[in-house]
Length: 264
Image (cartoon, rainbow, N blue to C red; front, side, top):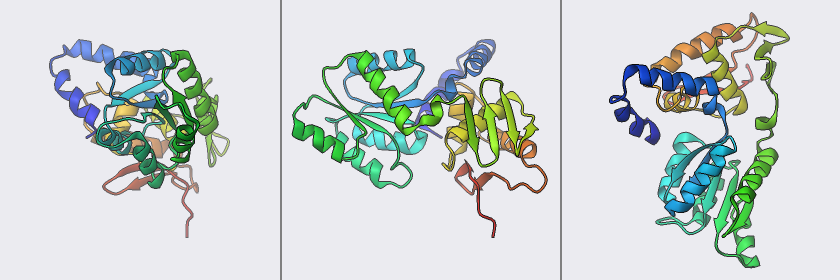
């Protein structure tokens, strides 16, 4: 179970069931779980609050880690779409966190923006050579950081700016909510559509059931991880046309991935 889900579940028990249902419906209807997820790694509370406010206002989701060790754990558990990483952190420095992200095959392509008060050219070079995609010197304006975040996302994750998603022979039109496979219409329920969209935006990455719950259903959705299996099965039944390969790979004891495998 992810850190965020562990924290959210006890709080849900104190919610009125009707209130909880309204929260679920609101979040699902707004598709906030399908927005790009930004991990903010920063130990200054005021700066964290400012970053969260401006990034969420710009249609990003955010989560926070306050030291280097927590950052690596959250990256491993939730697989964010971009990391905003402070250089000076407790326990493990931002430079070392970035290096470890780049060394891990699962995260080596994860975009990283480095934040630091170090403005010397040698420091900027060191930050970029550690693997950062961009380098922002403090103090900075919130609008500049949001603009840089969007620029890095466009460069490294162009799929988030597209009105259509394609993988193998599957095509999803986001404006019309239409899915086709091999030019044949695929009929999906709302949950299966969101699930497929999430996987299409992140193909060939393995996600645990808890991660899919957090991203597709939302942190406040108090449902069991095995619910994911039910909707994966429904998605497979809708997607797998006669003679077509199964694009959803089940990774035993790990989760699911959208992946075209070479049949031997």
